[in-house]
Amino acid sequence: MSFEVIVIGSGIGGLTAAALLARYQKQVLVCESHAIAGGAAHSFTRGGFTFDSGPSFYCGLGNQRPSLNPLQQVLEVLEESLAVVSYDPLGHYHFPDGRFPVYCDIQRYREAVAEITPQGAKELAQFEQRLLSLYNCLKDIPTIALRADWRLIPILLTNYLPTLVKMLPQLGIIQGSVGEVMDELVQDPWVRRLIDLECFLLSGLKAHGTVAPEVAFMLGERTRAGVEYPVGGSGAIIAALVRGLQRWGGELRLNAHVEQILVAEGKAVGIRLRNGEVIKAPVVISNATLWDTYTKLLREEDLPQAFRQSSLATPVVDSFMHLHLGIRSEGLEQLTGHHVVVQDANKDLTEPGNTCMISIPSVWDQNLAPEGHHVVHVYSLESYTGWRRDQEYPEKKKLRSQPLLSALEQVIPDIRERIVLKLIGTPLTHAHYLRRHQGTYGPAIAAGKGLFPGIYTPIKGLYRVGDSTMPGIGVPAVAASGILCANTLDN
View 1 (cartoon, rainbow, N blue to C red):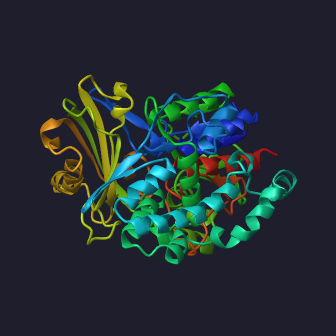
View 2: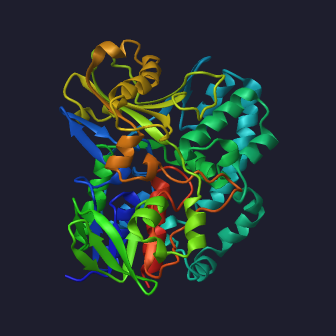
View 3: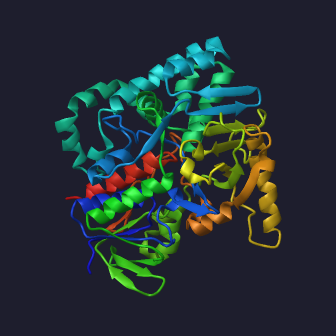
């Protein structure tokens, strides 16, 4: 069988691009190295517990219409749907000086801040209003309508001219960082720390490194649409995308490791699998990171040397330590599902082990754990540097997982006595199972310090999608990259 498009990797970016192209009547093949589809968003099961490998926080997947979540827009085009559970507060932040509930409802959110710092709450309201004015412009242009070539211009001028005019006064903030808005409007140190934390959770960078539209969209969407968890976990999202791909005639091959992207006379012509099989196609889309694409999938001579060097110099977001636990749940009836623990106020939020994210999704979906148990996922930034699979590796894993357990004790004090299953993931785990350069989650390109690479490459017919192409760590950004790529290829 011949294919018009081959997609390397079945992360959300790759599946989104592939499923949409199948919907657009292209002959599409997705090759996935792993035995499970989903990339960093796959689910896996151990001992009766179903774990999310990565993302666990979702917004805009419910019944609110129109949905502004790019992923939900894709599912609607594919005629697929998800069952979700809504909840509020969306989580609790645990600072050394106290516990703070984070509400979707913007008024309740500000009231919670006012209990800690009345003046800070007033400053936060001004900060939010500035960003929400930007959101009110951005929300009128759905991601599913966008593309990454010159044809975008007539689409915008024909369908969204009033929105573009409304956006003109916002041009300065569109190109700026959240930190610039914060410096102008917020002096309260507690609120500044809160803004830094929310930016870090969203982009992997603090306020001065995070682009303003990213946070504007987050604030607007969680206020308008609320947050929800997909029944079945992140694996349910992947299953819906795979169903959509196959419904429209696309093909997914698992355990199909791509060894090389084949290039002839400056054009992508197909791929070669590890087993030696060659599959031809005039279009190849890589869902691998830019570092893996340009060093492992392509020969050095396939790329212009200056382009290759500048691309590989792109700064990298650190990897993570992960702790997946199955625990006994008796006495935890009031437990909520999302927590962020900042352990030491004197250390930077980005220091490994200091800011720990905790997800307990069986609070919403009891089928993820055996009866009488919960499933827990805790993770924190961790540098890839210094990790090796040597005789000291098992002990180092245990040592570096201790900050995660300490953070979890602030939510469940007797957590160590409740554990019935423990899995520890390191940057090496990420790099191995997800085939990701140094286990990273993508580029660490700070606001104003450069543009994200986008979907294009110097090789004709070779495109890229995923977290190395769009700002932000998270599902909406990678889904948006798949939309832009698919729409651009839908001539």
